[in-house]
Length: 126
Image 1 (cartoon, rainbow, N blue to C red):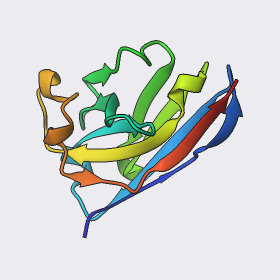
Image 2 (cartoon, rainbow, N blue to C red):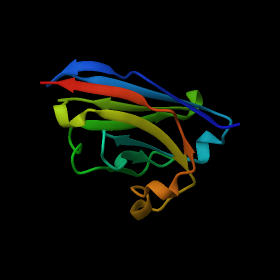
Image 3 (cartoon, one colour):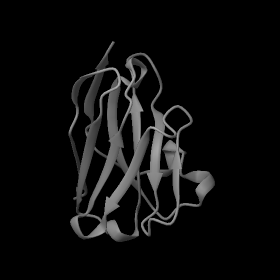
């Protein structure tokens, strides 16, 4: 079955960096749009970043643009989220998600993704 396993979360201070990793198995990774979402306590799950399988198209949430970078290694079936200049408002559980080939306008749509990981906690202290 499909498995998405996130790692790399932790506790950091404002301004520091973290790199999240999501390793996938059981799916045709090379044909999937991969993404990151996050959910803070009491809030809805929020789009963070996405990249199509070819790497030709990426999308970012407005609150992370310029600070976060998504990348992927199709040979390793792994997607990464490099998070720089972290802020307390970035504190959340971060989820990796996989979906079919998506047009750019749908890459931010949570309902477009049918495979989800269990999440990894990121806490940014001020």
